[in-house]
Image 1 (cartoon, rainbow, N blue to C red):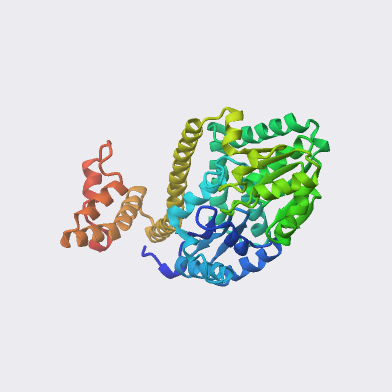
Image 2: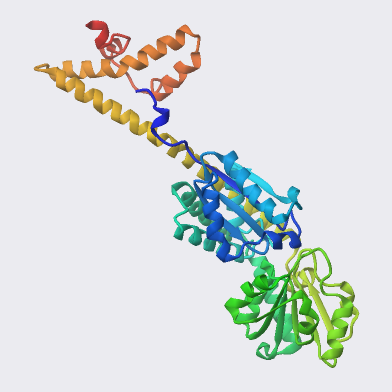
Length: 438
């Protein structure tokens, strides 16, 4: 049966367009950041511009449009144009486009937190699932994207269960809680300030909240970003313009902006200490790159810890973290290969269905014309009818010296498998068809 290319839609390919902490500055990521209220409109625009299925992931560390498209070039062009418009012409080199296998591997790696600023942190998986839920509620997910996300979640679970990758961030956060308790004791009496709502900062915040921290202020580059993080915790929020006043009231300062400049300077912390009448301040710098001026450590009554200090407290060495990351990447690649293989098999399903329908139609035709013929005659006619088109195709290929076609046919019909074919059967299959006899 000939294939009818126009009888079904072209298969969709996966597309990812975005920017992350690896490719673009925090200031430019702030421009890209999509508020929750903006996301449905962006998804609708993308589906009207080439994406058959789409979701948007917008966090402190990354803004990405990902989905499936039967015309991936059109879809990626539309997504890139949207992001470039938000950047107002800056940072073009920081926007990446991934397709096919590379897009699949990237999404699996995000789910497993291998693309996070701090590898192994747990926040990103929740963020991806939240983006999934939002797109699903909007009807923007189809079979392809749904199967990809489910496979990514399964890969992430495998990585977190069977490697030590998740131990690093948790041990760092626990070390931070232990260090702050050593200075202040009961955390319920501590006032916290989160500067720049980066993902590692949110992870630290969660650990401190679980340990008893109740009073919290979030400082962000703009009011909406700060409010978005502060809202779930019932916390206060300010912009960087009010940072000096917020520092004066903070016992614990968590730096997580990662802007590439020292947001927390020695002079600022010195001024806060004077305003606090020398009441101690614990500065926890978990940003990559760091937010805090190393000179803060020289101030009396100021205690500065960065990720390396926390690693020393947690007794976690870089070699073990790197080993866990390598194991996690190997695991992700195995999952990606399995997903690619399953997707390739699914692409053959329509052809298998067409083949089965064709065989059933031939069988029905032979039976209808059989009359009083006995079983042997009916089955002989059926075999000849089914072999008519393949026989003609093989002979045509031989005339064109296309030997590879014959090899595929032998594999397709199992001609080289270990079983005997009777001389009679071989003779009937040798080339005579019902049309030859008539």
